[in-house]
Image (cartoon, rainbow, N blue to C red; front, side, top):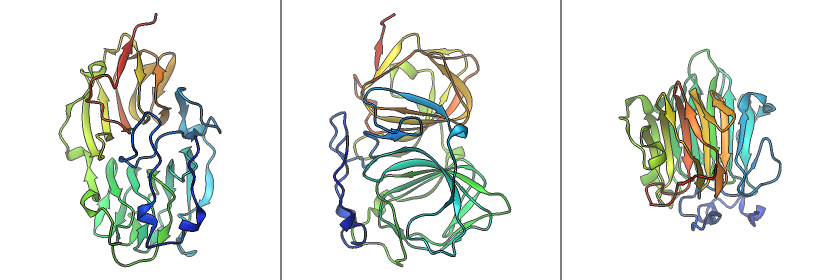
Length: 298
């Protein structure tokens, strides 16, 4: 699935907020703007419909000398491991920024989501430490960036479209300030229940809900969990292992592992003896009946 994107819009600072998101391939209208449909991955250079992909992010080739397009040349580069991407420019990566990293304030031309895995970074007046989350909508002006301390910072870096830095000192007029999350410390959030029968014994912390009911959350699967049946997932999902594990069929999905599950994939039985802790992004409201389907075909 390919999105028709015109590079002529890249430098059109007044108009980039009006670029339509891609239509979700499960039938959604794109209001969520996550652009998780139709992605290629580090282990599949072409999009493969209805085929989930699991891999260890430590095996993904690291790109050194990485920096955000448009950032000044004097900004210290970092490194990137590209996990998933779409022709519209949306992507999910693991970014490492060195301790000497400093970048000026400005805006981005696409929504940007951050989840800190290691270290700490200051963005304007807000400090993000381990397991802090931020959502920066396109066109929202943020302050100077600086890695805090002597340790490099490692970030799950999720661009929801073609992203460039613009050295502008004010919010764009149509920027979605009401959706801006400068910093959310997940350690301070309460645990809540999940939305699906398959994971009713698990716990969930919402980091963000998008406009169509999908969103971003942390999922804790309790020890001795057994989903019994395989599942059909009529939505797109990305997940990253933070701690512990869950067996997905014969695959041991543990720390630093990544999952991309396109819409209408059938995932094998999930089970774990010791439990696990995961970062999850989904582009559909899972509280609706029929969005996660048990499938006893064994």
